[in-house]
Every structure is written in C-alpha cells, then in structure tokens.
Image 1 (tube, one colour):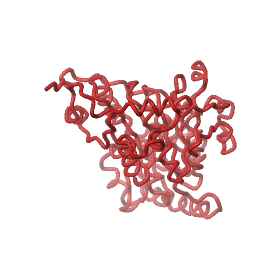
Image 2 (image 1 turned 180 degrees about the vertical axis):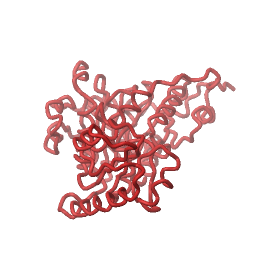
Image 3 (image 1 turned 120 degrees about the vertical axis):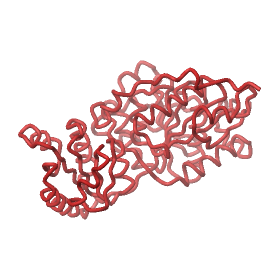
Image 4 (image 1 turned 60 degrees about the horizontal axis):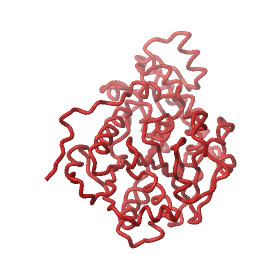
Length: 406
C-alpha cells in the first residue's frame, strides 16, 4: 500500500492510474511516519503537490537518515531549478510533475526497484520497534509520576525490557519516588546530540531494584534549558530500538520535549482527577492533541482518585471530555506511603485495589495493545513544526464545565 501525503480528498482517485488501488492517504506529516511503522513493509511514500516544500524536505531528510530503503517521491505542479535543488539536498528519490501520471508510474517503479535492493541488504530490513507510552496531563498534581512509575515497574516485572524516562526536566520526581541516586541524567546526552547510540544511552541509565531502567531528570532545574527537543527525540528513537517499552513521565505543559515524545508515542495515557481544573485541562489537552493530528485510538484516559467525595462524579467527567474512561484508580493512603518507601505499590502490595486497577490497565492498554507509532522527527524545524507553531491553547467555552453537585 503506497503512502500518499496529500490533503486533497480526491487525491487517491487522481493518482489511481499511477499508484494503483492500494493507496493510504494521510493529511499530516505525523501520520506519514505512523503509517510507515504500522506497515513496515511499505517502501514508497508520495508527497503531494500542495504540501509545503520545507515540511516535505524535513520528512525526506528524516526518512533518508532512519529508513534509507524507503523511497520518497515529490510531486510539484511546476518544476524549476530551485525545487529540484531543494529536493536533491533533502534526499527525494524522484521529483515529478503532478499532472504527468505516466512519469509518476515510471518513477515509482524505478524507486521501488532500488528500495527492494536496499531492503535485502542485511540490517536495512524494516522491523517493528518497542512501544512508547507517554503519561500526561496539562495540570500538576494528578499523579502522573505515581502512575508512570507503577506502570513501568509492573511492565518490567513481567520480564520485558522497560525504560522509564523523566521528561519533567526542571522538577522531575522519578528519582526521588524510586529512591534512586542517579550519577547521570538526560542533560548528559546534550553533548552527544547527533550521535546518541546504545552505549551513550546506557551511560545515563540508572537501574532500580525491580529491574526497571530509568533515565532521570537533571538534579538542577537550570539544566533543562540546555536540553532541546532534538536531543529528546534522538534519545527516544534509540531507546525504542533497545527496549520493549519506553514509558515517559512528563511536565504539566506542552513543552518542546513533550511534543517530541508525542511525535513517536504509541499510547498517550491522559490523567484526570475529580476536580474541575483537572477536567478542564484534560478537555483542552484532548483538543490540542486533535490539532496535532494525534489519533484518538492512541489516547486512553485514567481517572485517578476516582472515589473522592468532592461533589463531582465520573459521569460528569465523561460528559465534559466526551471520551470514555479506560481505568478508575481509587484513593488510598497506601499510595503516598509506598512513594515514601521508594517501592511502587503495584509491586509492594499486588493485591491492593490500586495495584489491581493499574495492572488491569497495563495488561489491556500497554502489554496487549496492538503496536502503532507516531514516530516523526522531533526536530524544531521538522515536518511537524508548522503544525506545532499553529497550535495555541484553545479556550474552553464557559458552559462546558458545570458542577454536578448532588
């Protein structure tokens, strides 16, 4: 199935003569790379004539670097020297006039012949990679770190290779929650940016007694300013090739680091609690993810401290966010007690209701969920840059949230 990046609803029909019937049309760059991972045997990507040339070139550069066996063909309505020069620098396999379907068909055949030869070379055949899971809410105090540490510890206890990454780079709590003493952090990868490899990643990993590997946040908040989205994206691309699961704890904001993680996550675990500010921020988070092109089927909602008696009810949350709740985690004083001991409650008290709920969620939505990925380039000037710059925090209608006090 050929992947066609084009916003024209009639694109599949327009290029049917050249590309055949098996065309997957996607409208944003993020969906191109998702489709490439979902269909790892696909070796041909067509970029439509109206796609911004800068965004198209960024995608071609990424594919050339990460999947050199995949052919990327650029369509333009008018061919001139500047377009051809830009395409040559970016690494497009062919540039074809959008109205010349015969030339497009020939270009696809030539490109696929080269791609099949490259795919036969040892080490270049596409393979499925580990799952990336992000735990997020745009409001602090929802229990992101507690959920992330417990899910990670449980996944590691099943025998899978699991890595927990603390992306709250200024005020991360993963290390203190697990009572770790890291000698290195994400900040130590800055000097390796552009050539992070397995050895480089291993140099910043701190191991927990449960068998879980962690990459902790810097000890000094000021170090966060040195860490770019490019460094985070490169780290995660390396990590997913080494681990079965990469679980990411996040700050309560759509920072460039969070956007880099969202670009390649398979599952976005979104938290809410029974208070209006948390629900409002979750609704805005869902709206923002829609603007970013993040697929709805890759988003799952957890309601933390779901049995709190605060005048707001589960059905109020569902009505506000217009999305079902995947898991409800009850309140318990045992949870902060386990954090103070540095042992995830899911391991320390496996029969506790909190542990049972988290384990059921992990089994259904992480371990046994089908693999899917959004692994696009997290570079600030990458193919999602235009989308990111256009995203602003939407304002919630005043009538959206009403207290359901009964």
